[in-house]
Image (cartoon, rainbow over all chains, first blue to last red):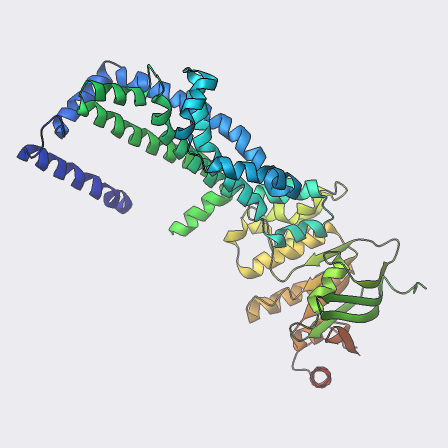
Length: 255
Length: 235
């Protein structure tokens, strides 16, 4: 309860400052609409279903982009962490691609994949791939050699060492990668929806900008923040259910 | 030539790390159902020697011969080395992942012998140091090796836990009749536990001292004190 109180302090302070500044009329409502205008826009967008429609489109994109990223990054991270040969072939290329921001590739992505869903998924994929890949790789690579010795003592083969020790030991770090990657997917969404989108929360924000409706822009931004936080909370909850030893660790830490 | 009384025979074992020779021309024989303790100062090569026996470290030269019918060697490490994602029961039966001949029916018996029945479903981070080390011992017992190598397994626990673990180990030794090679830097522990104490220094065995005293032994026993002086003198 105390944590919740502490966490609410800054948002309330920001809201109060925002209210006072807009009441004082320091900025024009076209630059900074008051909280009450934003609240009414939020209610309108919610009532006519516009906000939910755009959010669902964006969520679908994030989900598919993140899923593709997961399917590629986890196996590749495991392979790179396990095999020095595979690592030596892949690492320089991946290291090179890692430094190119996905937004810099937009012109080429449009050229190759068109302006449909594929281009948006590609950007989300590129943004979310590396946090997950690098965490998976690091989790496998940095497996405690003392645990591996236990398996070797029981005559485990390399594939058994991987299956029963390296991968389970890396799961917590893979989970960190998943959490980061999910955040990056959500952040890349606006970039993805810059590409000739006709729906999605990014489109809603850009459209509002063109219509000079900063209140809707703020509604869009706050919605992204809230949905992102809810997804993160749900993800951690699922993670604690899936990894019971982690859950119990959290419980005992909190005592 | 193979010695028939030896379960494990070592000849001219050598190991170096760079210029430093850690194990130097070691030769010895371990009989079945014997409890041998190896004492020595830190860095004298005890752990490297055990790791070579366990197949976790390659030797430079020499031979390690195991009696043909007894080929399983299990090791209990200095730290419990439990898999954090597995419960106590799952950690104990860990060896069954690759050896399907190991029956999980043995689990309740091992849990009971090590007083871990109530902790069967706990995770390693919920255990005390002594409990974790008992799980580690249980994991090796479940593997059912012919020879158990123990590398200072009780060094990280407090005095009372150590006493309790020593009693448990001796009880299991008398029941299971395994061959135990126990490395320690604690001379009294070696004398309380072992049938024989090997004094190791600079990668070789300096002397072998028989401890022909009935168990349980008290560290304050006068004969034990004499042997203690003998070992300290050799070190």
